Image (tube, rainbow over all chains, first blue to last red; front, side, top):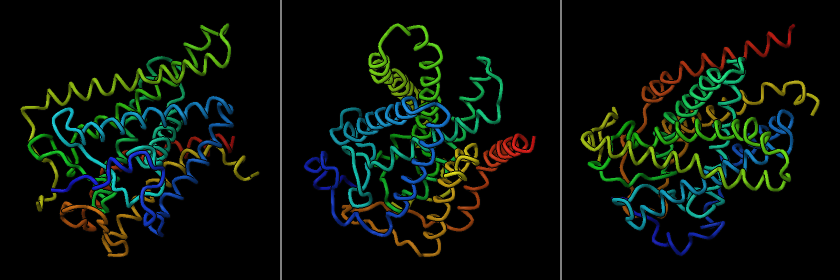
Length: 251
Length: 83
């Protein structure tokens, strides 16, 4: 059974964990950062400097807290045992237990999926917004179906849930895909709602206050997603141990 | 920079497909042995069934609806550019 890095806790707060993580295989990290720069440029032109920075940092905060919470609570067996962790040797830069590149990848998928959905669905009605959100969520999750089976074989991250404690699809717990879908949908909805509904209604407040409240309220989608994941996890209890992967497990 | 400005609307498609392509390349490298799985520092690493070309094709096929959406978005941008 795989286990956390022996220095998991000691190195938790280091921005660089091991020097052997700087190698040619990290070229994918550099490409990811370049793609982030391209999308931030797109957002700067479309939404302006402040909003795109807030989108990026809001997503950073959201995924940073959510993923760190999931990994660290698993390490301490807070809610039923180990969950997953990222290999400390595989990535260059870290925020807690999560590689920086993972948060950047999340930004790429969340932002680009919603922008593509906006291109396809032009209407501005509430119904159209719902369609855009669902389409963006599905597009983000669809890529995740490719990422996960490949990256677990590269030991980029390691799932530690006992087989009988999860429902598996592609050798990944199904709640991972549900959580990803919900995060993309809820964060994009939050961004649209905040800047189109909430901020205009409170335009007497200072810019600093409006931006500050944005960061506090970004915890709402986070709580929503964590709550739903817990509910799904409970609902799936009778199905736990079922494996929809076409690969046979070797251990 | 001017080119980037001209193709601004394509950037989300480049971001999305670029990231997707990167995963496919990693998958291909894994299949053909160009990217050795390196479980450095892992105590008793999990053993997975190796990824095959057919697996990758199935994973890509699962994304066909997504490619169709990207294609529609691409055509819409081009139509706008032409008009």
